[in-house]
Image 1: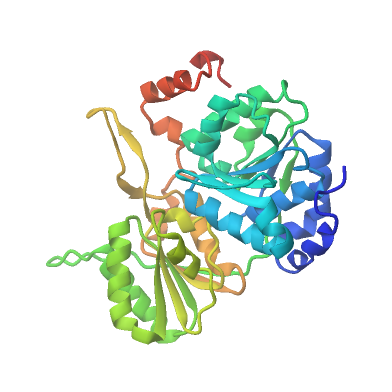
Image 2 (image 1 turned 180 degrees about the vertical axis):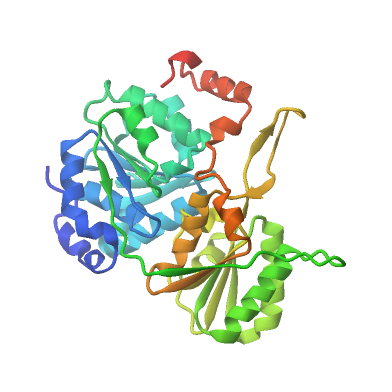
Length: 395
């Protein structure tokens, strides 16, 4: 079946010069055409999120039904939709690319590529159990293993025999794809080889003074001063666990850097206009202070330095108090590696970890899936609310 955009090869010509995924473009087109399910593994920044929907178009998908690309965060769904629309050009982008997140539906009758949060697609399942509006579903960032992602993968696995024409693409930013192969059988796993530059890892754990308790923010500010003393031009990405710490750090850095640097926050609730500023070129050094939203979902261009606090807010169910909490906890080694890799996209980079090498080596390899740290009663109730049948029969 011919692509919906006749001159599609022309539309993607620029892609071949920069993104690792484009070196295997034709292989991916063939894999989509020949298989009902494929798994695509590639590090963040390889082009999975922006190019896979276009690869599906090139494979003749999205003609009579839509291509859905799920994202775990609304900021990623909106940003990626705008990026793909821009890449397709003014003639096709605004017509064929849209997004749907909570309280915002930016799609139309001609939308062929629809970026959607995984929660919104799950909501659609209740109205359209067989997801007949779509001929292709891309489950992006599946390695995060949120409850929504696990529910969605279970639904799709059960749906595949009833919809032989449906294509499913599962993407992971880590090489831990065994769980997905176990769930979907012997499906092809396509690895995108990175073109990353070397990243030097420096360990600078916070040294607590006997008299003074040095905060993460203070240590970050000190580290940024050290970096800017040697290089006042290289862009910096800082990872902090909470919005409060981000805003505090941004305020201090703005006061200290003045007009010599553009200091920007990045977190899930940030307004759309402020999010866009992060991706625009800056005539001065850019310093982005972010939560883990910048770890996998969003690629900030041109980063030379990463400062990693080694912490993130991760939801957990407390069995003793029987409450759900969002404590600040150490991240996994895989998450730390994802963060470090942000510095090696366009040139050699440096990652400063504000914890020891021993601490890093003692951390778990991957983040525990959300279903393993949730109240199982909540999981069971959600299954019944979504009319997905009994727990023991759900994939």
